[in-house]
Image 1 (cartoon, rainbow, N blue to C red):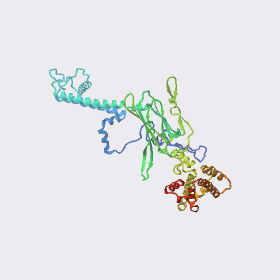
Image 2 (image 1 turned 90 degrees about the vertical axis):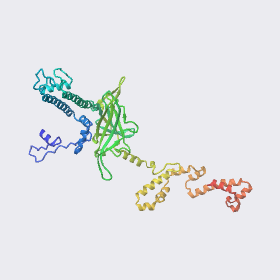
Image 3 (image 1 turned 180 degrees about the vertical axis):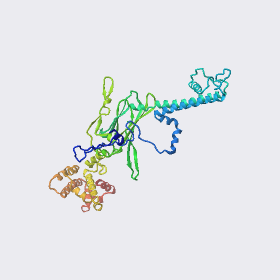
Image 4 (image 1 turned 90 degrees about the horizontal axis):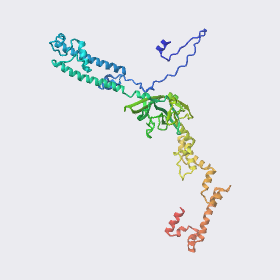
Length: 498
């Protein structure tokens, strides 16, 4: 079993035959859904490997210090030990060569002879002399004399080279140990993201928290959506990066990370999830990368924590449990409920579908079809809507023949409701309203009676005029009085009746 697992992996299937002589095989177990390759792991590690660099590898040597810091710890320790060992052996061999050339090795026990380095008569003694000098131990048994100028020069070179090696290797180890990568281990992200309604808007939410009492100074959070797409020109863009707004305009991306916070992305027409619904999440493939940056309060170094959420880690219609409770004199955070969610009523439709459904349910609210003004009545708006709907359903030739003054508008005028007529009669005088309200009276009779009522006060006003003006008003065989008036009065009279 273990051999099969090593050879084929964990996704192999076992098919067994029935021992009762049956000719059929047992139904294989359903294959588990494989987790697709992530761009960023849950722990923040990026699954990217650089290959086929060619001659570009020399760039790593030009920045040797950063290259050593980026190496793993086992390689750092190996280079650290190897560098010191090689440097010590090299310098010890230089002291041994000087003693060998001067002949100090053969006359080491001669009391009358002054060697370059006292008590150095073989390679181990030369190695010990170098270690005592480099580490500034100075036991006093081996020492350099003034009869050896080449030894003095080598001693200066040894001091300079040792300082450079110490500064490089010890500095590299110090920087690597003080890196704030481990600080990111105490910054938590929720295991799942959730989509539900918040403040009347469909919102994508996830949770972040800080386990330490030391704060993250100037903490800022960013979100990237990684999704492959194809441009209208046919270009395929693998892992195209889109920005998710988590409060850039309002400053909500600047966090005061003392207690766990819920980060929200409002799904609107500008969001990449504008057309995302609960049904389409089963077919979509995307990855949300979350980046939290801040300055560690204790060290002053910048720390960055990362995680990601794939489409199967986004829960539709869920909300996070509250984790903060008020105790006596302090607020308590319960991290046992940090990743917990519960279901809430959430529409399974996308924001685009919801807006289209709202627009279809209330077409009179559409500003493009009818402008709401004091002069436009509801009948005019209804006419525009009826014309638009009928003309869009007809073919192109019939649309040209119908036009705006075609049959739909006439039918719409003929089928006006009684409520619209009542609204229009409200602006008429009381006599006209009574005449119009009489059943069985035609429109022509109503117009005649209305004209008669309007002309009655005009005739009465003419009877009250002086004799001269009455003759002017009634002169010319009952013609209009405008012809006998002066030009100014005629102009005023025309302005009055227009």
